[in-house]
Image (cartoon, rainbow, N blue to C red; front, side, top):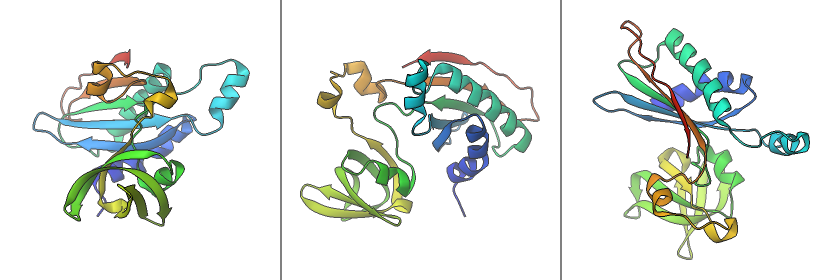
Length: 206
C-alpha cells in the first residue's frame, strides 16, 4: 500500500499541472497537533528560458504558491483524504532542492546529495555522497570512493547539497539553519472538513 505522501502526490499532481507547474513531490509529516503537508512545486523545464525571453519572472513565485495553495485546498476539502487538522505549505525547491523518485535523481547525476534511509544499509541510516548513476529504482552513490547502492523505496529523504562556491554565494548562519537559501512559500492551516474551517494564509520569501 502506498504511503500517505505518495497517495497525495498522485491525487494532487494533475491539479498542479493544470496550473502550468510541476509537482516535484510531497512531504507528509504527522504530529499530535496536526499534520504538515508540504508540496514542492517547480516551473517545468524549458519554461524558465521562455520566461526570460519574454521578460517575465523566472522560477517559482509567491503568486504560483498562492494559486497552487488555493486550488489544492479546495480539492482537499472535496476529496477529504486527511483526517484531523493539517497545515498546507506550498514551496519552491530552493537551491538545496529535495529529490523524489528515480527520475529526479537521474536529473542530478554528478551532484552531491544528503540522504536519509528508511532502513539501515551497511550500518548507515544517513549519508552524504555524489549521485553516480540510476538504474531502474536503484541509485548508485560515490561514498568516499566506494559505490553505495540504495533502492528509491528505501530512501526516506534526500536533498541536493548546494555547491556554494559555484553559485557564488556565502550562506549565512540563518540559511544553514532553515535549510532553504531561496524560494517562495505559502502556508494555510486547516481543520477537519466537518468542523468550522479556519484559514490563516501568510506569504513570505525565504
